[in-house]
Length: 130
Length: 309
Image (cartoon, rainbow over all chains, first blue to last red; front, side):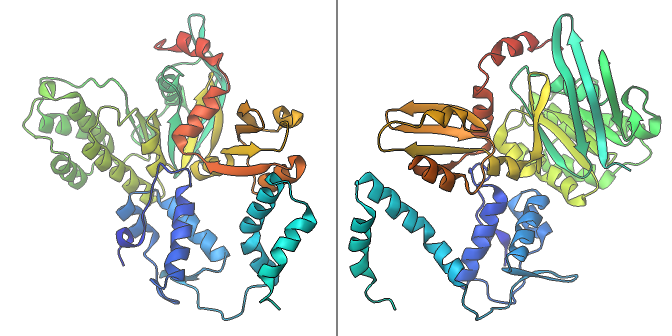
């Protein structure tokens, strides 16, 4: 698929271009627009089509490979990693809750609530959990 | 052994009693596209000229392709190209004549590339050089520099006179060079948005020294703006935060930028100060301003340096 259709790059954004690419690859995979084992456009193709430095694209691909999102296919380029059905670890799942919890903690602090008061308010909301 | 194309060590360049480069150290890595960023009059042109042996510094050493910059062999010179800010080409020549004239100086020449650029950049082969506009002159000059496929291309404010369309085409040409992986580009600019697209490295010149030299993405990852608000008074040790650039405070909230941001800093601040913390990404233009804001007293130095070349 054409890189121009896949990615939207804002060079003047505060988010480095390699991070924009990484986020967008992740989103495309999550949304099912690129499937497991599907090949991604080459570094050269992306650099030429989006008019960005090839090193930037390489960096994004390498980091996604490190994170297990992409796999390098020798002599061919990068593909979306084969899906693993294993559930992420507890720690990883806790990690994804963290931004919300931080916000909760900050708001509670601003409202001058005590730890027990916050937990008391939170508890009924968690009644469906094991 | 080294992968540096240009190496500058302890270079000082003065014009009269004005010090433009002040014990500057810099090395340009092979295969990179590097943007040299600095305010007007910060000495970018002087740096580029000293880097290529076009000006003699009072102190320090400069090497290009591992040869002394002031005694480059013809072979080394044939591997580099320099596009200055003020372009002077024979006004009485036609575009095609000046191409043929320049071509004669070099052992290798890419006719296909030149033919392509002439049509892409809409330069008339039969036009007289003297009748070209500033932008067209700049295009022609860049084109002449690309003709012999230089291993090192140095450009001084290359996009200043170009319209958006020409600028895009020029940037695309730089990317072609970047894709080769072997060739090196160094260009000075104060237009940060161009740099953001094509450069992978950025060097910042301030007060006669290179104060930042790293990957562009690294710069964006490490300079961030942070907003905090606390219950009660702002912590007194805010001023001592390492890497603090600018800080504005108002009652129980403050906004400041740091130049050595790490992912765990927000958490650290939250627990240290019991503060509400929000992090903002900055683009290159904002980073450039934050980095320069810090030293207001710079302006004196830079006014003096302006146009000293």
